[in-house]
Length: 349
Image (cartoon, rainbow, N blue to C red; front, side, top):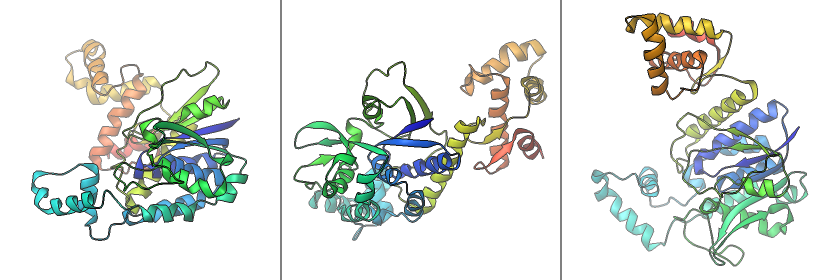
């Protein structure tokens, strides 16, 4: 089976998508189309070029200064201004920088423009066997666009990649003679372009970020496999290399969870226990809180399941989530694959 891949927008959280891609490559999953919005479009260009090593290298070496011109700013203060995470005690220090941004009419993205030109091999994109679509918004024409990138002239490709990722906080500049803004304002997860062009088997890589999804009816013969995370991926403008490496690791394991049926949310478990064995473990650890076994099974465990948002799951899933709590309290590493029996032994040691 060959898939199409949809990549959601989300700024620095986009490192997650590269981890997903790495897991797909290792599993031999084939793809022949990619659609992307914002950072998803930048990663989509690399997927179209089939250059995973370049993608890993780019995100492993990323910094805020490769996205915007930070000269004259404190990077931590700038992140607070961009994300709106400003506390009252920050105001005295941040006001001069805020006035500087207003005076300059936004953030200078010359570094991002240079980075896009560095990573995007327009000849490879044009000649690729992977069809590539991106979403953006033309402010000049006041409409959302779905762009088939392979069909663009080479000298327009980098402009359109930048157009898809053009954050509203960036200094407004023309790209190819027009003004654009981030594609997340019309379609943060660009499934429509893939469905419209006849792709039936789609992998959607979700990012927890603000955006608007285009609403349309998914045909009955279209199958969508979603890869997403329970982990915290941080802020959209947190372009820190170490943070991005962790996001790649999370994406890699979340994809493996889907590919190989791993269990858990923030931990990754290979299942060896039956549901009955899982129930026995739960009773050993939770049963003492009830006066009778019946009260435990009919009242306490359903209450616990509601609290953990797993009312529709079986006893194995409930055991997994309770075990994750113990593992987290114990400080056990989460970004690795465990046999369930092994994690139980470590959590109870």
